[in-house]
Amino acid sequence: MKSTTGAAPVKQPVAESASSSFLDAYFNISQRGSSLMQEVRGGIVTFFSMVYILVLNPIILSGPDSTGAYLGGGTEPNIPAIAAATSLIAGVMSILMGAVANFPIALAAGLGLNGMIAGFVKIPGMTWADGMGIVVIEGIVIVLLVLTGLREAIFRAVPKFLRSAISVGIGLFIAFIGLVNAGIVRPGVGTPVSFAVNGSISTWPLVVFVIALLTIIILMIRNIKGALLIGIVTGTVLSIIIERFAHLGNVGPENPGGWGLTVPALPGSPIQTPDFSTLGQFSLIGPFQKVGIIAVVVLTFSIMLADFFDTLGTMVAVGTEANLVDETGQVPRTRQILLIDSLGVIAGGMGGVSTNTSFVESSTGVAEGARTGLASIVTGVAFLLATFLAPLFSVVPTEAAAPALVVVGFLIMQQVAEIPWQDLRVAIPSFMAIVFMPFTYSITVGIGIGFIVYVIVEMVLGNAKKVHLLMYLTSLIFVIYFALEPITRILGVS
Image (cartoon, rainbow, N blue to C red):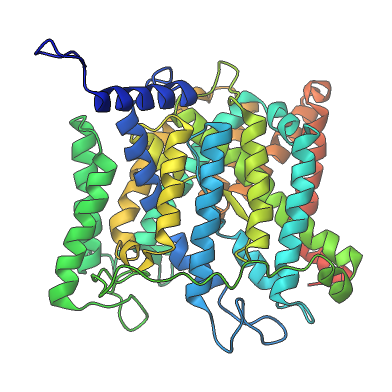
């Protein structure tokens, strides 16, 4: 800073400038068209879009295993311990992703994957330690695939139009998640889904969702920075005020007008001492002793396949939204991204909180301007703070955070323009990949269907030699994946 008095510049501004310069050089902030404030803001938005996992993961992993024991010990669900460990592992792995891969993507316990583990421990003889052991085994296998280059090679073997289709499908999937989380889309009577409550926005939580969504939309159209974060904060403050007077409580069969997952009430004390009793609760030998080698291979394969392709799809979607892909659709530092993601699987198993994976909700931070790994570090620090400040972070209801997911879904699915829809050879596999993601509530299923249809179409058209060998292998694996239930039934491990 230039002195206006002729005196030597003071040291503090120089130190700040040096610090800012170091961050800029290390993370390539300016080179990627970002700024320090954009990265911080993006990291915070990503955290608030992911913080629901601190509520959901403990719920999913709170049941007893086949022996009647609970994760974290005790005679009843140890929700605080699971929440604390979930936050700890997410924080550490997100920071590693930012520092090593310099990519704006954060990690946490994967939804769907945790449900699979909760199902594994119901197999007779299996314990929570055994289930987490399978997670660690899966992580070790995926790390080996990354180190040998196979995981990255599979990603590069996917045609560019299919990668665009994956991004579009994920965009629709994210929007659908937001609508479902907010309760604006619900199970219908006589139909798979329906709108709001009996077709009407008749509850205060839904009003909060609408106001927060419109706030974000209006701010974005007016090109006001921080639109997503402002929308989330606006929705949260409004929720707290409404709950203070209306006492709505949690949503349920007898209370359709309640809040989803979290009641937005200010806690008595925002600080609590974390309980990390789930850490180290895993066994690598136990699964083989309880269900045998074949069953362990099948179980590991099933969760690995879901984790493997979810990450690839998420990486493409976030990289595309951040404009970090090259002209061929490749993401920079792919191997580092995949390696940290794979180590997150191992860390999640060792931490007793299920496999940790890259979260597509990171795209909310990208929508706020995040372009570098600094945003992931900010998200990671927020997760570490959440181990102590869980009561404070639990104030944000899903109705306040879900609008950000809907808007981000719109931003991501704009990639639909990159697909040549007049060419049926390209359009049909793309369409199948896109629609199966939201309709089956699974990124993996959408990718698998798209791959299989693509290979079949090329073979029928006489273009078999143009298809990469890895696409044949991957499609065959997906065929096996979609037939896992009868396979496990025949093997007696279902």
